[in-house]
Structure formats: C-alpha cells, structure tokens
Length: 239
Image (cartoon, rainbow, N blue to C red; front, side, top):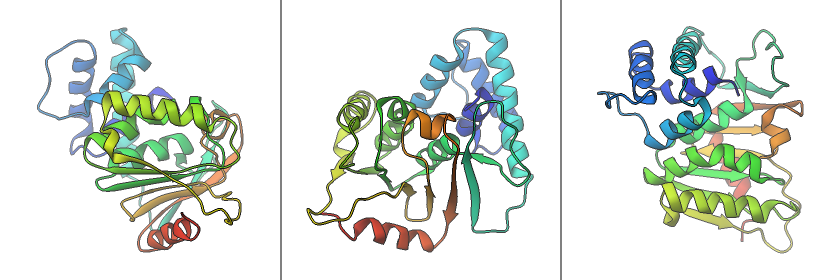
C-alpha cells in the first residue's frame, strides 16, 4: 500500500476530502486539531509511516485526497468489486481499483458493529499492518471475532501482537477468538466481513506475502444481503 492509499483510507468518508487533507497535514506536522474528527489511532499510523518531513506529509495528503475524489468519480453498478494483491509499482489493469491491504483497512475503518476475520494463515507482519485499524474499531465499540487458524505456525505470535495492540489502543473486551469444531473440515476460506453488509472474500491470507504484494492474489469486495450468507458459512463449523 502506498502513501496515497493509506491517507485515502483515513479520508474516505469525509464530506470534503481536499479540505480535510489540508487539516490532516497540519495535524501531522504538529498543528492544532481541526474541526474534522480523525481517528487518533489512524493518525498515529500515518505519523509512523510518513515521519516528520512536511513535504512528504503535504504531498501524501494531497495525493490521498485525489485518490478519494478519483474513487468517488467512478460509478460502480455491480454489488461487488474486484480486489487484488500485486507487486509494488504494477499498474492496475482497467476495471481493477482496489488492492487487498487497502480493502481490509477500509472495512475495519468503516465498521460500526461487527468485524469477523477468517484465514488459514496469518503472520505478525500482516496483523501489525491491520492491527491499528482493528484496535480503533474496538475502541468505537465494534466487536471483533477472529476464527482461529488451525494449521498456521505463526498464528500464536500474530494473535499475541493483535491482542497487545488492542489492549494498548482499543477495547480488549471487544476481541474474541472463535474455535472450530473438532470434526470441522479445514477452513481454507479467507474472509473479513463488516457489519454483515460488506465482506472481502478472496485468495489472500493475512500474511505479508498475501496482502503486501509479494504474492499475486485475487478476491472480491461484496456488499448487500449476500454477506449474511457468507457469515452463515463461517458459523457452520464454529464451536
């Protein structure tokens, strides 16, 4: 994910992205808080990413606003959008507007009630990338459920990192880990659902390779009543 996408994820829901981008840039260089209420956890993510260089901050915020405006100018008629993980610098083919990491962060940022995450493999690098937005969601009162991977050798350390960040910046009482029944088939699905109205479904594991662009991954962001069926599948073999 580049700087523009990361800033765009923070600005995606504001009414006036250009004005909000200028306010965000002022905050990141040490200015007074603006009238726009940015999530402080996500602001800290940007601080760690962008550093203290005012020129980089200003450019990233301007590009983030342009990214949001560009997305809003595209009319989407399908109830789903294609999502991909591609190596850095790879131009997106026509019709492909979403990357995996950006999509997962936006689902977490936009959630108001529930988030449910399932993947057979997770690692600490990918969880660290997502953890700030997940922690911020729990701080807003969103319940986060993680379906415990049964064969992932890195799951324990990844979940430990997620728990640490949520204890620091969110509400640990909102985090739960769900187990599968003993006779359950191997849960090879990869899903992040939000509020039972939107979900990522795809090939990408929650790993550095899966969402960071080393692997080539494809998935979809689906919206609407179908998401309830997606969550029903998650519940089939849930202990």
